Length: 509
Ligand code: XMP
Image (cartoon, rainbow, N blue to C red; front, side, top):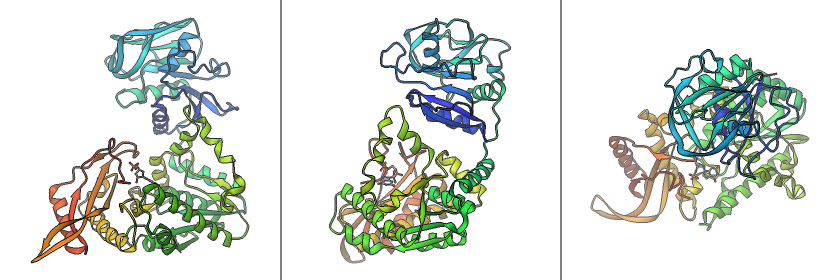
């Protein structure tokens, strides 16, 4: 069993970052909302309290009971957490009369403190708070200050309790990761054993125990998450894993055949279901983006349910859910989100009544990729750009016809292959082409043309929440544009999307 670290979330925008930094140290950790902590704390070797948008002085601020934690386990309180400890333990927290936001430098560090080993005076830290600790709590020992923040860090004498008002998890805190390592490894003695290899070994064993000889059905999408989930399950239960890969007719050019082939080469027990006609029939005449999405979702469920029925005695539904989705559903802001799924069970398709198994539910995206690499999954598959579930349907503005799908597939293939050939694919987070619902005038030879316009989109991002357009070389854009107009019948104009998100979105619908 891995050593585990508990992160209690008070709703800070940076809580996920704390978890990522801890994982970068090869230490396993889990985030729990402060108002719904784990019942059994025995597996946690240390606890971190996150920041919060609240002020400790406000009545509706989180005021958790820490009696099972404080003094009993090594505790690191960050920002709000540090103020919370001070406020309720004999210290004083008050509004700051100067702005304590942004970069600051440690001007004082107490000598000989393990927490600050390998951190020097002058080290940059990131502050983000409007309250400040005026007076330390009882038995508090000041460990560090900045020019404006006297009590930037403290510990409590006689306890393994540490508190810092700055954010070690934010990249701008240059030695933040070192401090987290000092606290977790040197002070709390947590093992740095959470590696991709260790995860793979442990999860395969766990899946074997959990599933035994039962059958599992899983929908593959061609993306990284469902593929890695499938390979893990396949290693655990072999051919009792039944994968279904549905062609909704809205995939990239040749994607269905080539990905299906790759899956078979990987030894997966996979059935390809070509339901293109069913999807395209259902979409005929629809031009509202949400109506298109809903229709695709509904037909997918129908197709998947039909296929799942053909398998006898299936007990489990495998899914490629990853940690950010899990945290989202239990966050401080939205604890109600998880409650709803238990209603209407009678109305759900049969496969949705299966027990759910999610091998990746504790991993971040980059960890999923590393696990995939450990499992020997092809780099090309692991490095694929994200592709939306509704596929090209939301890149064909307006109604969808088979002809439009085929035009867009050709354009998209030229763009994506071009990115690969010019060594640009891996520098881009996501790319694709959009078919616009307008015709424009052009001239080809002596002929006047009146044909379709396509837009190319390539963005940089880390999670899709924000994005910026990529400054692709003009030379490259010129080549791709020429190739598209020369080769794809029905297109006479190519434009490049130079909008960032926000205010635009990545997809056009
Ligand atoms: P937007 O357009 O919201 O996209 O900036 C952010 C990311 O989400 C993907 N996306 C979707 N993925 N179903 C999906 O599975 C959808 O309906 C959907 N809409 C957008 C988009 O490709 C980008 O990566």
